[in-house]
Length: 302
Image (cartoon, rainbow, N blue to C red):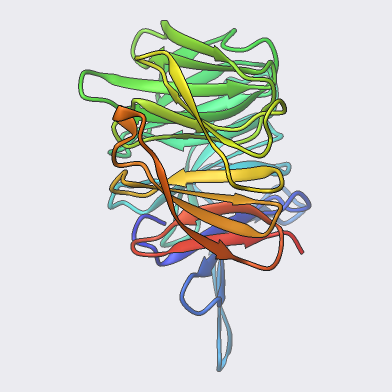
């Protein structure tokens, strides 16, 4: 979560999402499920030393997911919202405090594979297995922009980029392309060909894109979409599985199947000067990494 207090997760065998206390590891579960009769029950569960405490809310404002959830994202806004996308082709906005679904957005013909909020939390982007991208107004669930043929194959990642001149959206697809779009017009502004469809992250200034591909799995690839050049950050000895920029944009954290997390000083990347200043040995292959307020949380493969 933006305040570093919680970690959200989904499972390929469930139709709801779970929330975890980042400091203690205690499990919260704030999601919704169908009870088999068509009724939707929202459940807030907290595990404490004294036992498990539950709150039930009969009847959600909107219909919850009816199939597996594939994508999840926290909103940076103070309203404490989570967005989810699933195999039922729907995007749902949830109130984290109650576990209730607030808005259900539909329109995709295939599964929703990625969701992402804008920097202020006012907009929400979703990518689909059909190759389409949609931008929604988070407060109302209204559709703002549709890009029907954004990619020739499934959209694997969508990320907003709050640049100085205008709001942009970056997408990556199974077709091996990274593209930059104008949010309001849906116009394609730039594209890169990268063989592979792993992670995708955008720097806080909206200029640099971090990714990795099949052709060079051991390196983090940084693209400057305005200048058209790219850099390779090498040092991992196995496939790079994830990377993310720190909230202040000065550090990039990357993790790999070699069991390491590397921290890169990217404060001078506009001058193409990047230094690796720390390597953390995790001791087990890592598949994802995320920043909290002042620390890095990593997810492992067990």
